[in-house]
Image (tube, rainbow over all chains, first blue to last red; front, side, top):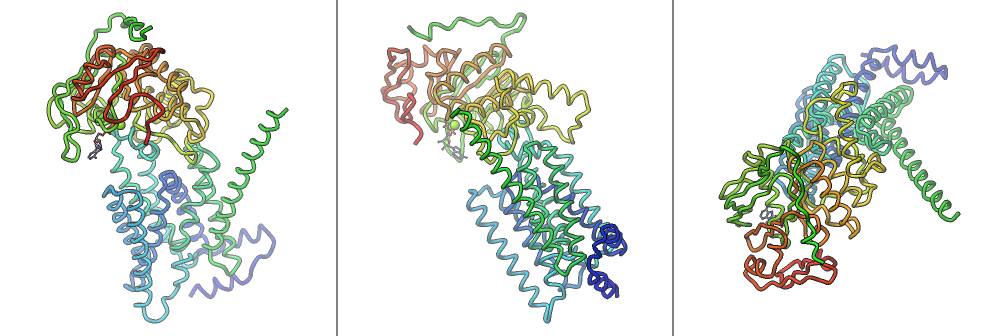
Length: 303
Length: 286
Ligand SMILES: Nc1ncnc2c1ncn2[C@@H]1O[C@H](COP(=O)(O)OP(=O)(O)O)[C@@H](O)[C@H]1O
Ligand SMILES: [Mg+2]
């Protein structure tokens, strides 16, 4: 079917005429779908990721992404759409994480429990893959992402879920921010801190399930964590930070998709490398700037 | 000599009827099946500056939680600003114990103060609205009141303990509360900062006419500013003017063990014989 055409397009490679290359990107419906899906996922990941980094829940986020893998494998095994596996498993995973967090253990016991859940998820994933006798078609795209074969219907589902999740976070934005940075005072003011934590994990599960469908289960971090962590480094202002997080996620997604289109490497690889490069750049330049400030001050004091 | 005697009675605002901010009657608190304190009766009048004193684990934070309505009383009755505890959340400013932000915390002080004002509100804050401007003005006002203008826009994790504490007090104040609950705000501050924050709380207490309950480990930095003290020990509490409560006889009765209160030549009080957590600075924090 379309795959032959797709491969023909890919192996044409870059023409080095930017306008023509750009036009080519939008020439195929599968690529338009991929760009739309990537855009939806990037906006959602930018917003949810900003709160996840703020709440220091990246370990929980990573665990959810590992849970996405057996979800997708189980769906393939059962002959169901992958999205069913992603949303189902990540939703259940979020419930399990909320249960762990709700049992009010110590922090170290909590992360040990989350880690065990992660190991179980990986083991299940490989069990499902080996039950699939023969080669599970596209195992590497489950793990590392793909932009091929995203249908218009998938894009609609992604959009509906992302819109609902972002709307929920927007409505709860201030109480969630309050509960995240200053839980004791928020609770005393009547903010439902525990319910918000529970709800946020569910939304995070949805977000991971969506992101997995573009970047693959193992590279969810590239879209969910790295742009958000970079934004937190760049500004402490909440509004500006969320806007930056979304912008960076969009930039790496679009660029990653374009690069993947013109080469043979998976999209997850590009998205990961680009966002990691950005993060590194920001960390290094911030470190240099603070060194310069310190040496400047020392020089002033010496003068 | 005595700083206790130097306290002049403060003028209440004209027309303000004196009513009670907190009243406990024979109240008891239980945690995990253990009675922390019982038979506690106390009254805090509006606009009073009250210290809550006592050794570690005496139940000072538990008392604050009971006032907030986060911990239901096991016995007795309580009224907070004329209502049952927990019913006047919007009228109470609260600063929890031992809250400091590590250097990685990338939140500005001004945003933290603002959360005190609108953090419980649902929906997205929209910049153009008049309410948004009013809120921003109020946030600016309290930041000025606590003297934190110079650093309120920096990430709070990069500030010193004293600077963080001032911003947290501003956060507790921003809704013009009738009652301020400050749980060990002087903890982890050096002596000059302890004195400065104590003076600030006194000034707020007078200018904003708000009742303050300040939990402290050491009475000396706040002694000159207090109206009353609540002393918790041995599962019981005594409430009164500092010069009545911090005496050998009263504390001996409260602890049920011989206690001696000495006055150093500089006016500082030293409590001797306390089963744990000596009163004077320098040798606490295990
Ligand atoms: N959740 C709890 N369950 C059982 N005991 C508790 C709990 N929280 C605190 N305690 C105990 O209650 C006592 C009073 O605690 P607290 O009010 O924090 O003391 P303080 O603030 O005076 O140091 C302490 O002995 C503490 O160990
Ligand atoms: Mg305490």
